[in-house]
Amino acid sequence: MKQPILQVRDLKQHFPITSGMILQRQVGAIRAVDGISFDVFEGETLGIVGESGCGKSTAVRSISQLYKPTGGSVIFNGIELTTADPKTMLTARRDIQMIFQDPYASLNPRM
Image 1 (spheres, rainbow, N blue to C red):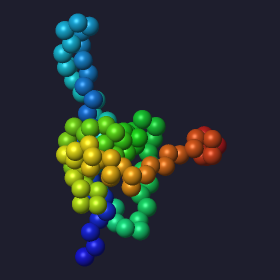
Image 2 (tube, rainbow, N blue to C red):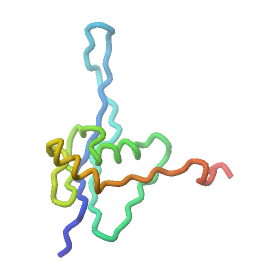
Image 3 (cartoon, rainbow, N blue to C red):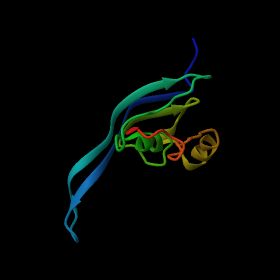
Image 4 (cartoon, rainbow, N blue to C red):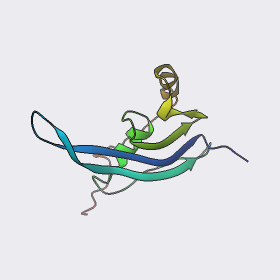
């Protein structure tokens, strides 16, 4: 059986909401990404689509470890990225690619 090149399990990215200027305390959290899971196999292409502000970019940044995820695991080519040391992450990032949509080349949803 083929092994996935990317495994994402229960990925969460929550951002704290704080109160107070000097003595800040957390009063809540924004759940930008809340428990996504999927596999990507060799030869497959993954597209993430959704409405503006639904967490697409945050999910991709969490998968690539540009944001440290609040929870879950990301395994890329057998390497657990959420616990990888900086040297391992540098090596892994050479093989990770994100292509963001060109807003000027996309269709206007109001047309």
